[in-house]
Amino acid sequence: MPIQVNRGVVGREYPPFSVTLERGKIKEFARAIGDLNPFYLDDEVGAASEWGDIIAPPTFAVTFRDERAGAGALLRDLGVDIARVLHGEQEVEIVRQLTPGETYLCRTKVVDIYEKTGKSGPMAFVIRETAITDRTNEIVATMRHITVVRL
Amino acid sequence: MKYAKVYFEDVKVGDELPPLVKGPIEQIQLTRYAGASGDFNPIHQDDEFARAAGMGGVFAHGMLSMGFVAQATTDWAGAGTVRKLGVRFAALVRLKDVVTCRGRVLAKSSKDDVNLVELEVWAENQRGEKVVTGRATVALASRA
Image 1 (cartoon, rainbow over the protein chains, first blue to last red):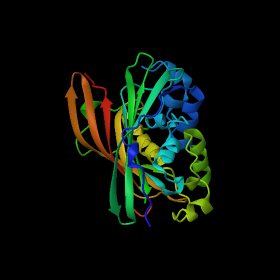
Image 2: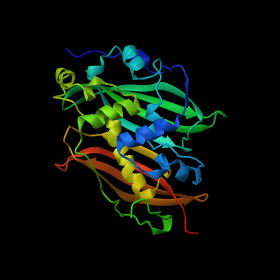
Image 3: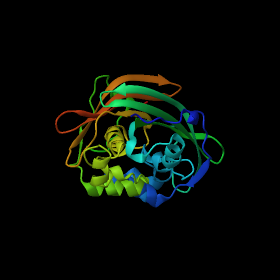
Image 4: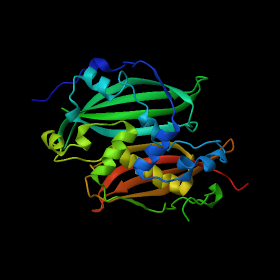
């Protein structure tokens, strides 16, 4: 018996949250991937670079999380257990590099839900977008996240 | 040479990125990635949980594989060059899998002093099955 997802979630905007980027988190993240690029890890290389500091790897913005706006909140709103979800697709657009000490504001909303039947059965695709802005309200990066729910 | 600078003029449509081989994937890397990313979904850590969920055992975070693809892109194009990266997670990456990331230049364009290169990027496992497929856009410096 397939489960239902709460389609009323489409259009929901989660509470904005701010993140101040820590130098150590950038390095921890790069090392966890095994990406030892000196522009992520070496403060001297960063200081001499066009950005004046180390920068975050392209996928770093996924670490910007908040309990009220993250996957946990989404799953509660959808009425879905975490054991049923898979990461379907992810897109990131980078306008400016993320650098340590900067404070960013993240706003996530659910933009669409659609259902499709694949070879493993019926699935719902939940699309969220997150806009990341800086202190001057300029857009720094955007993310598009597709969560697959096995119904 | 790794981290050599690539200039826009030197890139041709059809050029291939040097393959980046990652793995074999070990549980400790998934645990480490969970800590670094904040994604503590037990499906990547707890084999019993993953089996009960019908997934046949733990598998890697999709975002870890995307991170590998991003690394292959920046190893070639340089850190800070990625303007856009979009991927689909086509198959699960399991423990002991070896993931090879590849890419190919699809198109080049210049507008307002910004030189963009569009890439097809993907990752495959040791059986040659694609685990990630996607597109990347990088901005490269000009020799001019």
